[in-house]
Image 1 (cartoon, rainbow, N blue to C red):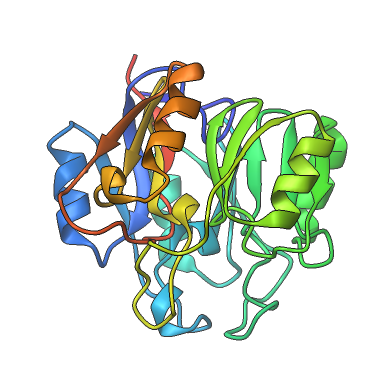
Image 2: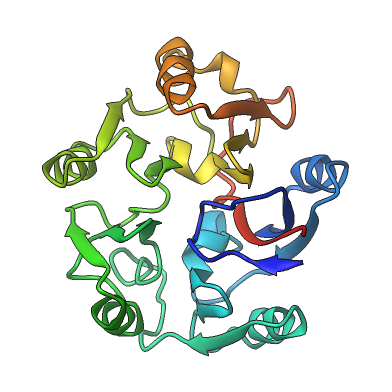
Length: 249
């Protein structure tokens, strides 16, 4: 297996992915596609609906580098088992927003979308060293709210993320909010219901065809030669993202 150089954008079929351990049907669907799943366990510092969400508890930096929420020893050890060199976050996660979103940033090629006021210092330092531009948005749940389609294209329901990305000359599809389940909340985010499982293959936790903006989403992704995959026939669910970590080959 090979490490992924550009987080969220694998160059080959994904062999290892991290996601919440509380959605067995999605995990089974990924395993049927020969993807080893690293199941994320509950974090006592986060609220129950999101306490296992991978996009809240870790942030891939690229290759073997990854940030893990401070104190999440199991996740750090599990990542080390797969050859990563994880470092703990500077921030201590807490249940209430915005103390829970320090790692919830959307890395897209040489850019990173996040609320700069809540972003963890470890990520800020890394971006400075690697000349990764931080695009600030009001939305703290930036990774949850961003469907990463390519190095220069995203789909989002959030106006501040859409504006920040467009200002950086990215292609943006703005969709209507809602239509994604997240038990415990009114609704979740589409970015939290998906992840790349191969080069130009975007998988969804649930049925993307049921989204009211599906035709717009499909057309936008077709323009980028990205195939949409529904992992189950269930409603779309925000599972905290499917984070690709390693590929075959």
